[in-house]
Length: 266
Image (cartoon, rainbow, N blue to C red; front, side, top):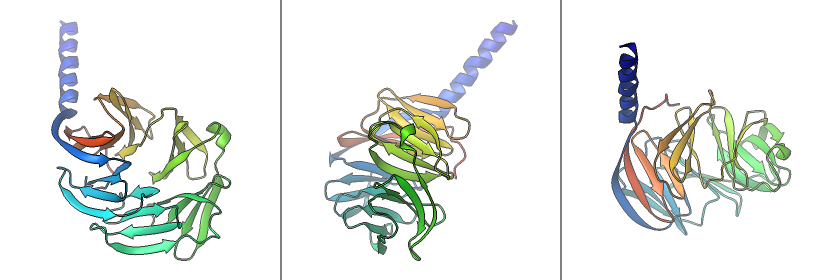
């Protein structure tokens, strides 16, 4: 009798979990070749093509388009700003939600010798990754003052790192290395974890980092180190919000309705 009750409870809980993780395909979008993707706090997603970036609402409706050279780093998370770093010219540009320039800066040469990537921080400063020595500096763009800096111990990562993305989140720094995977650093630059899985992008969902495998979405809890998976066939790029999963292939996007058991947001 006890075994039967336990079995019932197990399958009841499993059903609840499955219901909270419902994924339903709702729309397909045809696009040119997609070079990169990103998403803001409101669930609007951004597709970068050759020569332009288009902003869509969660239902796939075009909201704004920016004709531009291909960005080195696109970061719209700090709503209402859309931040773009152009390595060519070492330009930092903040756009408003309609892709109108709100402010623009040229990186001071005293900050970095070979500024590979620049991204914003939660306290309105910036991080720069210097390819000359793999140092990371936190700096104030208005005063051109460096507030903190460290050198990444690349021996912990592997030979020939190829870092293409950088993001500060929950007081950690996350790097995407196309040769070695996702690298997690603390604020002092210590390598805390390497996820040795080659991906084109990653993102955040509450206190979890998500990335794609061909047959599933993997969610890794930043604090507990717990990993869970959501079975779903994925493609080149992936975005997850509290109401959508956006799967982008080389050309085109599939939108899924998502009803997650969502962790606490920031």
